Image (tube, rainbow, N blue to C red; front, top):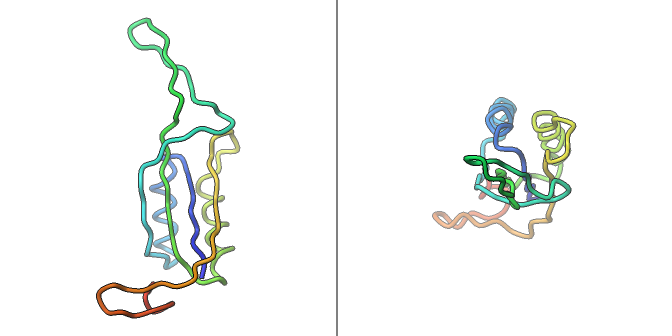
Length: 113
């Protein structure tokens, strides 16, 4: 199994969520995130005063899936989250050693379903 972690633009999340659901991927965790990469933040103006936002708000989407589903998930994330501009985000893939459902004690793929 693998854990796919994607840091994406907030405005891309709804379309990604619908695409994942349509294709049968239902289990995911979503959290708010903030960070900077090549963007290095952005500048804003409030009541005539300039200010810098060092960390840009993003959404972190996490999923644990079978190894054979990884490329499908990557393709969906790229398709629905890419604007071809700096700041579209990143996808990280991690190996998952074990998954245990707390309620029933099920392990492995059965715990993820």
